[in-house]
Amino acid sequence: MLSRVADSLYWTSRYLERAEHTARMVDINLGLLLDKSQVSAERRWQRVLAALGMPPGIETGTDAYSLVYKLCFDGTLPGSVMACVFAARENARQIREEISSEQWQRVNQLFHEIARLKPPSPSETQLAEFLPALIDGVHLFQGVTDTTLSHGEGWQFLQVGRFLERASATAKLLDIYHRDVFSKTDETVDAYEYLEWIGLLRTCTAFEAYCKVYTADLTYEQIIEFLLLDPEFPHSIRYSIDRLNRSLEAIGREGRGLHATELMRVSGKLKSSLEYAQIAEILEHDPGRYMRRIVDECRQVHNLVYEVYIQYSVQTALAV
Image (cartoon, rainbow, N blue to C red):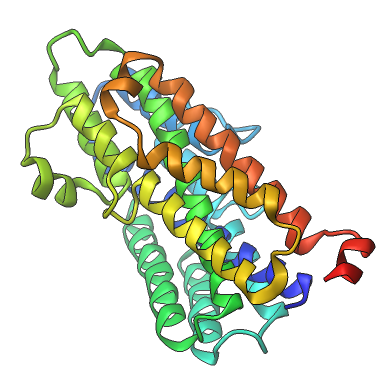
């Protein structure tokens, strides 16, 4: 597969995953506005911005709907929902011959749908329609990808982008929550913290799945364990890294992995560290540092994917 095609597939998937993650964080935080505490609201929006890498030029002290409007519709903001969907569509457009017609129709329809729903000014009513439409559109794209595209090398690059973005985003979120919410674990859990825990689980689409494993008894240790180490939940970090590693192995078997030793070493090391980790050991030391190490290793995997499959040297290309 040409490096240009691999690059576009990889980023189409990453951008859509990022758009959904941002939309879900915004949606959950809007729902928590029923908590009228100004301090609580500011802390929540600060966490959202921190999870998005603190985009420049955004203030949390402004009106919540003005902030949300910027995060959703500002096409000049690299991490905004609209910018991510536009970038995903452009990547898909460049490789239309490599994806199914249903995939293109879905991402193109999502592009036009969110452009239609963009209000001229911050609007609570418009957001109530926009955010679910975006999330549903991304899920539909993932569904038609799995059912209409051959599960060969191209499909595997889509999975690499999707699960690398998911693992990194969840690890960042857990690190931020650990510093801001989970740091007072010895104290009695108050109503504010309980709402924050529910908000974190819902942001990761994990509340119902968590309750089926642990019942509705929310504890710091169980939430961290579920989102970090559960082997079966699709939004846990362990599950995402396992799927990422599987896709990288499959790409390597296609004959493109002759120079992927370091990539597979880093990916395999991360997979093993999660597979054999114990939550008690993680909590005994510094969970925040553990999450930051996962983010760093995800960044290493991204760099090595580029080095091996996308921006490799002329000598490497000739060797392949």
